[in-house]
Each structure stands twice: as C-alpha cells, then as structure tokens.
Length: 284
Image (tube, rainbow, N blue to C red; front, side, top):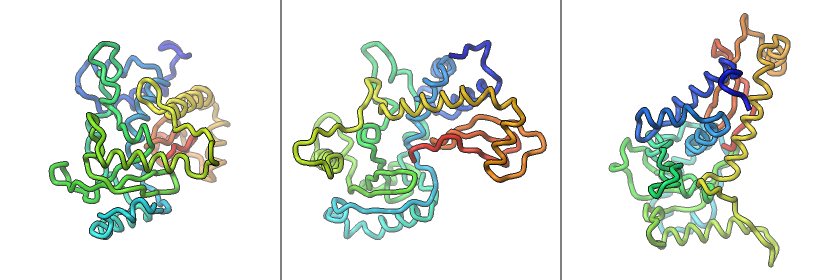
C-alpha cells in the first residue's frame, strides 16, 4: 500500500476531492480529519456509501411490477408516477425526487465508532443497502415538509428502472414492523427468490458488519486497485496518448490526467476538462 511519502500529487488530489464531496455531520474539524486520515480504499467505501444514494442521469428502460400496479393507490397516483417515469426514460436528472437527507448527511464518525454510542445506520440508507431499492418522491418539493407521503420504490441499474411498489413513510419505521415494511419485505423476498427451483437455497445480497453492502466494499477495493495500477502510467506520454486513441478523440495539447468520481463511475479527466475517460462503470 502506498504511504504518504510515495503518494503522487494526483492521488493526493483525488483523496482531497473525495473528502470535499462527502457531506459530513457534524460538519466539523474532527469529522474532516477522520476522512483525511483514511486510505484510498476506505475512503472509496465512504464515498460509495454516499454516492450510491443518487441516480446518475442517463436514459433507462422502465418496468413496472404488478406489485405496484395492483396497489390501491395506483389509480390516484398514476399520472404523477408516469410523469416521473417519463423523466427516467429521457435521462433527466431526477435528484429532486430523491430524499434530501443525503445532501447533508453522507458521513458521520458515529457510524464507525467502537463505543456504546455507535450507530451503524446513521449515515446509510437502510433499505437501499439491504434490498437495493431507491425511494423516490412523486413531487420534487424543495423541503420534506412540503412533500406528499407517497413514494415509489425502484430497483435501478445503469440501463433499467424497475418500480417494485408504492409506499408511505411508515415503511421506514424501525422500532416495529408496520404493514408497509412487512409488504416491502414480502416484495423483496419474492423478487430475490423469483425463478429459483423449489427447495433451492437463496441468499440475499450480504451486508457487512459496518452496514455497507459487501458488493460496495468489493467495488471500492476494485476501484482502488485500478487507481494504484494505472496512476504510475499517467506519466507515460504513450499510455496517455493511447487513452485518446481508444476514445477516438484528438490528443490534448498538454494532456494532464486527474482522477475523479462521477456518481459511481471511476474516471480520468483531462486537466482542460474537455475529455472524461470512464475506467470503471458504476452500478447505476
């Protein structure tokens, strides 16, 4: 693993960029120093835990499960749902329909504390990490107090947006199982076991003790390996020229690469900001 003395300026800049992007709470010197002290693989886990809660704007094919259409609220909400799905199909930015929480609550030391006050879920979306479902509000109101109680839950990939159900906010209750949370688990279990032969043993996506999906930790480790393998090559002019050649674009006059994350995509960005090379495509 690289130490502070061997870390290139590109890597230092990358870690600083990630640290600045993740919204901390409390937003103080202690939380900043905690992020700054982390290795790149660990920092990428924290970044991914926050960034995965967003949905990158790109056109997606839309699917609607019967569990949504058969909901008693479908008829009254269909016009609003269809309006949201048109935005999804066209690749519009649907961030205004997402929760406001992640705008200010991306990382907190309380989630990784070793003491009795540790709250593993304080900086995580429990449903997203456990089931892989985003929740979207049908109205893009600027504050949570102005929003309706109804939401759509969807499984989102780079190419597909699948509506699995309609829920109200009681689905997030953690002190007791509500009718909404029970129905969500039933939908999740049915989709997880769908297509499995009778008697088959099916495992849902595993969650680490930290509350992070194991897949997210694997993605972060893979990204870090890519960065460490490629970074030394970025001082080789022939390698950099090869990036432009593979992309079919003219080489910049003085190409200088910088590491950046765009949502969950690991990218190299030309210093002129005119070219972005996606080295690893994220899950959504």
